[in-house]
Image (cartoon, rainbow, N blue to C red; front, side):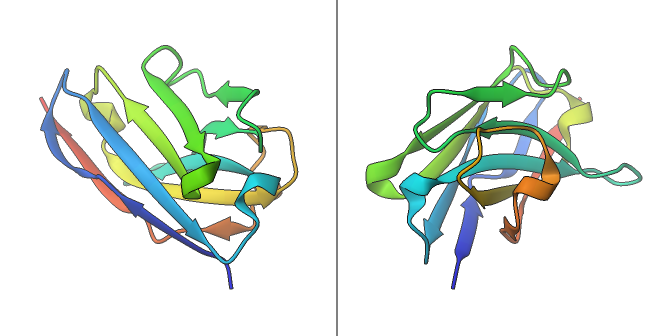
Length: 124
């Protein structure tokens, strides 16, 4: 059974940084692309960052490009999202997702496995 557990969310001020972690189990982690998505009140779910199984290919949504960095450590079965220069508009629940193979694309239908999410709140 695939399980993804996010951690690292919290309440921060605009301009601060946070690092989210995603611990994966029940899968051959080094064969899966990983992604981060977020859901803000009143908005559609947005896939914001993705990384392929080897970490060589990454993709970002325009809304986070240049501020957020996705990474992974296959030895620890973990993926990460480093978020810098946070803005109030980044307030959302952040979800980790996994998809077998793939090329680290920002295509939600390539990620059938999702975590429970972690709340990130950015105050102005």
